[in-house]
Length: 145
Image (cartoon, rainbow, N blue to C red; front, top):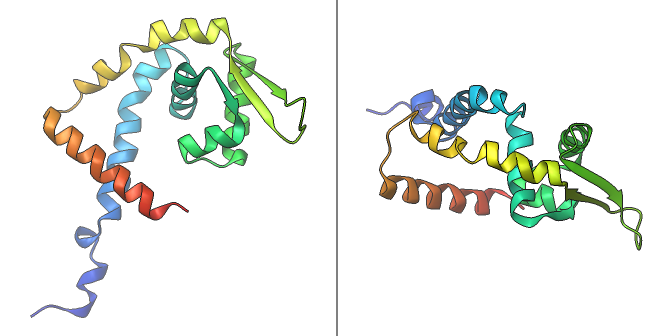
């Protein structure tokens, strides 16, 4: 017979393994990111800029599921390191544009091996990885507004 409080058991929560996995994966990234002097949030910000070269803070936040309050100090630090520039939009000063610099582009060469290094941290088949990515993106679409 099932107890009505079974729903409160940690083992019955989908959110817990997602949280724990995320935390542990970011922890595994740390030594690789330390080699290029980036935090995980700085790294994913650079990934967006390596792909798009320039965008405004609001657009970056949408890609990364981060608000401007979280993203602003990250971008300031990346600017201090010389990887990005931040400039107010000429037509609307409320908009802050972020552009990758040449130094930021060169950092991509150092970062290109990180996904492969991470791949050696745990074993998952390509099919499982694709399915997991699809499921997680599906959940993200449903829980974000």
